[in-house]
Length: 122
Image 1 (cartoon, rainbow, N blue to C red):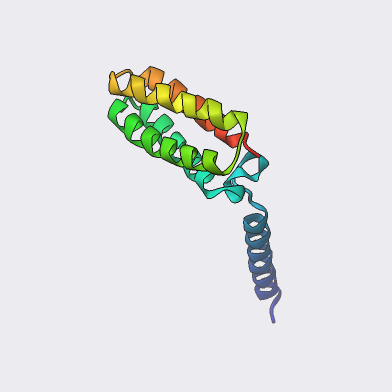
Image 2: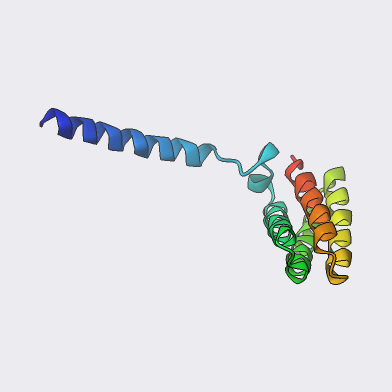
């Protein structure tokens, strides 16, 4: 085997190892909330989508994603008790109210706050 082939093989092996270790240790956010409860994970994902759309001025899409996030957050609430979950649910309610009124920027702030609280759930 030539030195260049050996270096290439070693590089590929290290890359594969890095990917395996990185993927196996990924917890999806603070406290591993994404790995711990699938409803919390979905609530986070849709709150992020609501936030992204709010930042673009898409009030209707904030409502769509905030409502889905809220459904998952309420399902998670049936399985656990956490003050961050309660605050996140309240923030999503505000995001929906302001999104329906066409206030994308305000809805954005509430969606962002909801996502931040959900990420704190351990």
